[in-house]
Image (cartoon, rainbow, N blue to C red; front, side):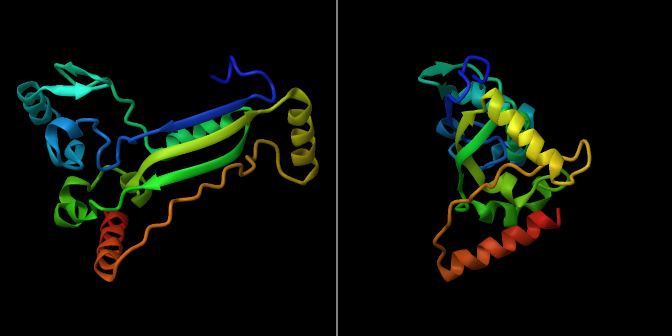
Length: 183
């Protein structure tokens, strides 16, 4: 998209679910449960989906579409390297399924997951492609600010969607956050 966008042009991205989120396997219409990508082996999941069938992208399939399995930080790294300015961004979280992580922490352990990985389900991002003049001005300002060569300037400020939590959900949120941090 960046290649075909004119300098100063706008790019709007809105996508999800991210792979590590509760519905990230894209099999929710067939398996109807959160986090199957962590709870079951790929062999078991594949066999179950072949038996049940997969409905994805508007049609029936024999298997899931190819998934990139990226975490949010991998997408953010790409945007940080792109010659764009983030105008607005919004992360949509799904914290309703945290009880699964609390009940089955062994399924999530050792995967290098963060709390954001398992709760960030969708991303909205509006960017503007920089024109050459603004790129040069940004580089000059960055260079004159005393930063060392090769040091990256922070560019993205992500806002997670605020969740309204009842006291019981608040407790579950804290327990799941603790489990994920200690995986």
